[in-house]
Length: 204
Image: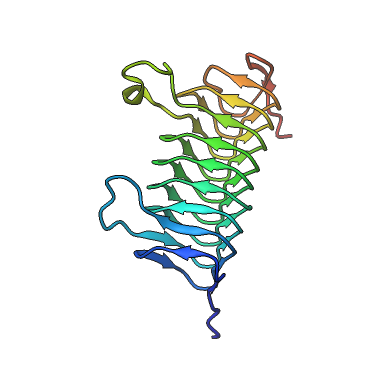
């Protein structure tokens, strides 16, 4: 068996306590393992076969599986759990304390706020915005933050907005440009602003 080598561009910055698997590519001007306030000896792990494209910033404490990919200039904050075969597109922002399952596709310019959960095989279209602040600028806003739950194999159309704490059921399809204000049942197509159920998904 031939071991493949990790490739790190000369302009990339890799902080201490970062562990990179085999056959990882880190392109120009990436920064991996960026410290955050209150951080103490926290390890950052990126699995084998990953490609971190130019200009991406990854903060400390991320636990990322194999075959991870980013587009250019993705920004991934601290302390996230990210599974295998995950792709995060160009200019997307992934905040902290997020759980992302396996085989998740996040397209370009997506915003995912802290305390969100993205289950296995879900798909987030370009320019989608997930939110978590129920009462912006309230004195207790940080105590009330609750990100959406995107169920397994759910698809979120381009330019959609998902409100705080909303659960998107597994296999559901959110049409492009929707504003989703309420929970969506599994196996359901929703459209509009505010989003309403159109019909169940037909698997025949």
